Length: 355
Image 1: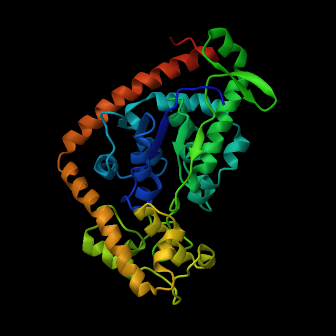
Image 2: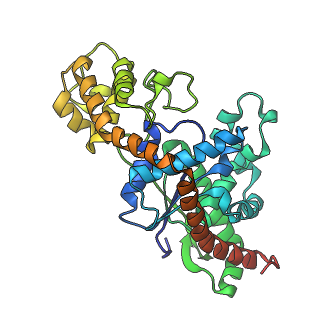
Image 3: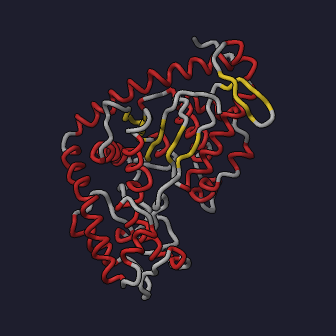
């Protein structure tokens, strides 16, 4: 890939309670990445309204996501923390990308099919073009890397497709304006304005499953609160949920291969590994042959140790909503400095007389 300034972008939707899956799959990785690359961390509230949201709940949940970022250790001075709707360039660039993306590409997005359900005609147009807005979120900052869960990998591939088509379609114009860098795309060399963003999918718990059903992803929308560990749960609640987590009757295996076909066991071992910063095999080296009556208390103690302090700090931060709003406002201003420059150059490339 051509040399673009390294930058990370990622976001979390403000819908429902944040849970352990959000923390392990996204937020904790944000904290780790901020020591390596410049980062933008976004509360993607525009994405949230692709389905109906109670306005007061959306405001509260936007602040909760921001509080979780800060409570987990994200440095809002060194990096940029903001909510998406403060930067209108996201929506404007998304329209350009709607005109670059092809209907066939969007029709292949499995998340739309899952969220729209059987009555696709009743789904919002916003839900259908959601991936174009996600591409705009990322490419407004010409981000080179995005930490994503497996469920968002397809959307990131679409982001790369949009970037590649834009670069191809406007290669000559990009060169004329001196705005791009040479990059190889297949057999061709083009002048690329947007990077082909790379996904960062790694770790033992990039996809945390329900505590009640190892075949389902841990979700805010699951009607059973016992299916997930919320970041705001107290120690007693965390321990109770792990104690009640679904398992089988066999002891833990001594090798990772022994977890095959044991979804619930694999999930709990993966959670332990992620919280401990190790691997599944390392967990099994310690607990192989042990019954779940031994493993679950150890997992509960570890979860309380890692999640408990975050919950306490979140409560402290949420007690000052004006302070959260100030952080998001400042972050939005910093984000707009980057995004407005990108959008202005995109308009020039496309031929829009807007500057």
